[in-house]
Image 1 (cartoon, rainbow, N blue to C red):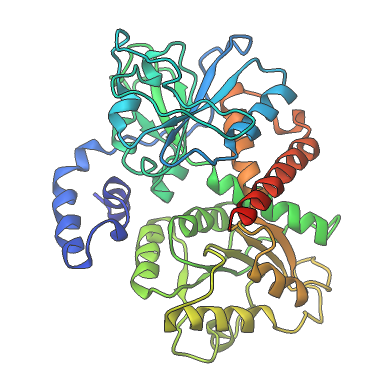
Image 2 (spheres, rainbow, N blue to C red; image 1 turned 45 degrees about the horizontal axis):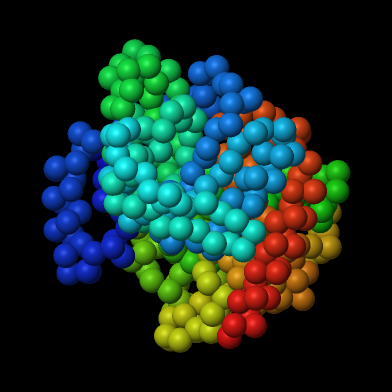
Length: 412
């Protein structure tokens, strides 16, 4: 059993005290290897879809009250003429999701349902889970269940396995590879991760805007600022979709960076930690190209610790580098590269401000959020991205986010 498989069973090292993390890691390596689902390599459900049925899709996790996902999904459903609804299913426990007791009491307003005011009601303790409320089509998962739900699934995609987190569940038929479904006799639950697709599409939008008509370059170096869960989905996207030669990680915690490095080692991803003690940047020392793709994966808050301040200082130094004087890999001069900041509160972050002033093509994090949701809907519906009016959908979400952030600012 590989370390990568262990990782997505027991979660990140941050979930346990440092002095216990090693013991927990070894214990779970022994005890949970049998619960890692097999890898499912195709994408999308092959079960015939009745898209005319009023399916109810749920976002499962906590907290979900302020999520933009219901508005995003309902807008997409309307745009694709799908009579579906998207509800918020607030829960701390996986038991709520997998409760198959159809006779369980379902109190009035027990399931979180989004309305125009962003209100949601808390479910009762003994409520039939989404799986018991047929016909189940799929679901979204968020924290704290993105990791812990994996052993309960019948299969996971390569993206889910590599990233170590599941944010989307869809259905497949049983086969010789998955002969014993855990929840039904005629279908299996497959987990995947669409966050990496959100990163991919957001970076592609930025590239096409900055370099119209140019071919997307492969093999360019990349930089990720941060070391949490978003770093993993970004690493997968940069390696799988853009063929990043080297992914540099600038992070306050070297141990966290080393954990990401170990997790992706089996995929052949070359990850290099930026040494906070060094003034010379690693690509300068190595004599290689500076990163073309940059993804920010840290909140937009003032740095407090010395390590956080050093990360901020080096980020500004990297982004302030001179513009390229020659085109490389078919990309015209005039931009340093493309930068996506996954933080979107506020929308125009400090990192984006710095990068924009220094000649980078900048992409707001809300674009990645929108795109990962679009990918979910495409998985469940079997529709194509080209069928969505993405400009219209994105504009609705951006405006709603602006209103929401303005209200939050007024409360402060």
